[in-house]
Every structure is written in C-alpha cells, then in structure tokens.
Length: 385
Image (cartoon, rainbow, N blue to C red; front, side, top):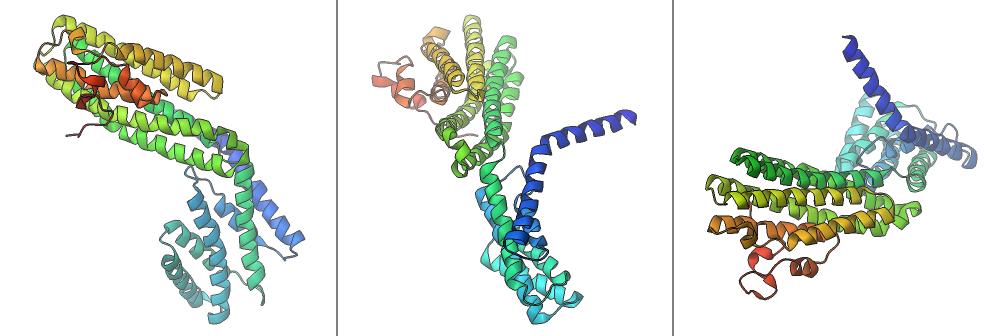
C-alpha cells in the first residue's frame, strides 16, 4: 500500500512539475483579463473576463487554432445568449433550463464543433444562474471577449512547447522503423519466421506513432505561424514535415518487406551466405535510421544538419548494395525480397533530405533498365493485405 501511495505521490509531483508553466500562464492571463476589464474598461466585478480566459487557455495537449477559436467565440456568444434570454424569459430554475437548452441548439446550428457548443452552454448557464444587474448585457459580453483576447495574446507571447514535442514524436517514428529493421534482422539470424511476423505486427502498430508525429507537427506549425518568437523555426519545421511524410511511407514499406520476409524464411529462399549478408545489411540500415532519428531530435541546427547528413551518407552507401545478386538471390522469392527493400531505402534517403531523383540514382541498375525505373523502385507504399 505504501509503495502505491509513493508511486501516486511521485506521479502527481511530475504532473505538477510539467504543468507549472501552463498553470502560471493561466493565472497571469485570468488576472490580467480581470484587471483590464475592471480598471481600463471600468466594469464592475468582470468575472466573465477571467472565466473566458481560463476556458480558452485551458490545460490541453491538443491546442489548435480552430479549437481555441471555438472556445473563445463560444464563450462570448454563450454570455450574449445568456444575458439576452435572461432578459426575455426572466430568471429561475425553469428559465435557466430553457436558456441553456436554447443556447445549445443555437450553438449546434452555428457550428458543428462540440467544444463550441459546450463553451456556449457553460457561459449561458453561468449567466442564467448568477444574478446580474439591468443593463449588463454589453459589459458582460465585452468581458468574455476580453478574456478570449487575453488568452490569444498569451498564446502568441508564450505558446506551448510544441516544438520539443514535435521533435520527440519525429524521433520516435524513426526509432520505430529502426526497431522493425532490427526485428527483421533477428528473424534472419535465427531463421525464425515468427520473429519476422513480430516485426510486421510492430510496423502495423506504428500507425499510432505516425498519427502522434503528425499531430505534434501540426501543433508546432501552428505555433510557428501565430507566434513571432517561433518564426525562425518555420524552415526547420517544413523540413521535419517532409521527413515525417517519407518516414510514414518507409514504415508502410517496412510492412511490405516484413511480409515478404516471412514468406522467404518459410520457403528457405536465401542461402546461408545470403541470409548472413542480408541480416548484416538490415542491422546497418537500422543503425543509419537511428542516426537519422537522433539528427531529427537535435535542436541546434548545425548539429541537426551534421547528423542527418551522416545518416544520408550511410543510407546512400547501403543503397549501392541493393542488388539481388550481391545477396546471392537466385530464386524468385529471394530476388523479390531484396527488391521490396528498394522503395523503403528510397523513402529513408528522402527523409534524410535527398530528392527522389538522387535517391533513385544511388541504387544499382537492374537488368539494364534505364535509370532503374522499374515499379519496385518507385517510392510508394505497396497495397497492404
């Protein structure tokens, strides 16, 4: 029991530590909105300014521009609806039910967002249940707008640390691909198709990692758009966006390769020498992807470029070896196994900054095909089963 309590206290401490910055922003924003409405605008007890600021700037890991706009506008319209309908229907429990009901219907008519409807309902309920003086319609609505505006200013001046989350999520995605390649290599080492199946399952579960990376990237791009303090990061974020797109394709193609590997192991498609060579090749590819992941994590631009360039050099060296004959692939199954890695390699090179033409040209030509333009070399995920 004591260990559980200790774990609970430790977890709570870490949550408090991680949330200290956001809590300070919320406190400063709410008080600033209240003081501005009271002392500058001359409103008496402008509690709705603080409430609107807190609701707009609420704790949320998925802060997005549209969502924040829904909260801010919903707060203002909810106050307006509450004040207006209170004047029409009067006050009391029955009237409050009617006011909130009508406010929700209006919100759903204006906007399909559930966040917008919720905020409008909350504000309408507060206005309907808290006694207000006659003629308070305009000041109350103004207070809500002041709170929303204060939250937006706070977001621009001190946005959430979305850039670190974006770099962490991108690195995690690259690590996931590296883990799949290591798993495939181990399957070859032990000649165990079940381990190749495990690599395939891990690659399939990587879709959640892709979604996390895209979500973090979207938040970071919005932060860099609305906050002048982060404008200098827009170029690196665009590069990260391109890297995430190619890593997504690489993860998809790793599933294609893993499925082909299962069949190749079961069919004993590779010789012992070819198996050892392909296993070593996959380990080297996994290490190169790890270097790429560490480069994408780097905050310093120079270090980032150096590591990503180092990863690209390693991938290019590996790409030169992607000839079925090098791995002793004599059977059709063995040749197909090597060929399915070529689109994956192109995706990884592009994630490291190479163009499609550069990545394609680094692969050895096959069967005299001009520019290696065979379907297997096209950087696109195959259809999944």
